[in-house]
Amino acid sequence: MSHEPRRAGRHFLQIPGPTPVPERILAAMSRQILDHRGLEFQRLGKRVLAGIKSLFKTQGQVIIFPSSGTGAWEAGLTNTLSPGDKVLMCETGQFAVLWEGMASKLGLETDVIPTDWRIGADAALIEQRLREDKAHKIKAVCVVHNETSTGCRTRIDEVRKAMDAAKHPALLMVDTISGIAAADLRHDEWGIDVTVAGSQKGMMLPPGLAFTAISAKAIEASKTAKLKKSYFAWDDMLSMNATGFFPYTPATGLLYGLAEAIDMINEEGLENVLARHERLAEATRRAVVGWGLELQCRDSKYYSPAVTTVVMPEGHNADAYRKIVLDNFNMSLGTGLNKIAGKAFRIGHLGDTNELTIMGALTGVEMGFDLAGVPHKKGGVAAAMSYLAETAANPVKLAAE
Ligand SMILES: *Cc1c(COP(=O)(O)O)cnc(C)c1O
Image (cartoon, rainbow, N blue to C red; front, side, top):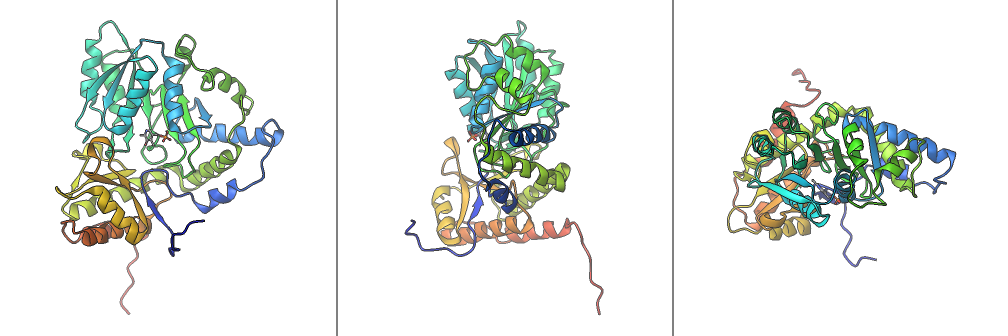
């Protein structure tokens, strides 16, 4: 039992994942456990394994692991690569740093293209590195689609074009853990070989499921890849999945939730879901500009539809500010990570979010600035409101009586 006094209303969880879970999904998950080798499960297994494909825009297979997104990173690397293989990575932010660290620990050689953490991966630099790699020592290019720490999105279509222009055969691996169902991702069209995602961000589910969309080329690579794996091996998973089952006990409760989440996304329409994220992100950025503050993402080409990272004015600590917002308005904002710790905070606007959720959040941010004495201009919230009203779906003017 908590000894905190009760706080009325709901907590505003505005971090860029995990995100609040809609009632429909909570209800779908609160069911008795079922036999994971039985017919009822088989129907559920087939339903989610088929349904998940459209979120990745793939006709190919999508593996569902009972793990956090990090597990699917590991699976992607160990199933396709061998000890000592070189991988090209782009240090776009904290999640790229973590993926890079994992690759090194697994015995891969990492070739890292640095950035200033204020843009996505630069396709021109990737092309240059690949052209220099005449012997094709680089076996995979790994990029983070939506860099959750900075609010910068990598243009995966441009990365694909760069790889094609360099005529380089490396695999393309994409982390879209915080991008799935928020930022457009086209696994097949963009020729991605391994796309990694997680349940707890744009997909509106609790943490605990990881997804990997894989290409035929990735499956081919997995036949000769020598890095060790067992639990995360694709082959057992793929052969069991063919009949709707899993090689070990799946997270059945979360799969009920997943089936519901897929239905909800299809009912709204995936393209509408993506457009909603773009619109709420734009409203958020207009608020930041209205406050006279700086976006961590310095080039509009790379703006993220899922999260906005805000640079704190010099001399003001972002975490002290976040605590004031939490204590006063019961809202959690995302912390700055690694080299921008204390210097920036993040506003998540992904998953089950609408106009009034984001307006509530932005209002809390602006009131927090007042309370914390953070220098800012008035009018951020007003700018976001105007934009949302101007772009409303059903604008109807009442005639004067
Ligand atoms: C959240 C996140 C991760 C880590 O995923 P876990 O589910 O915490 O393992 C990795 N990459 C990105 C881009 C993320 O947003």
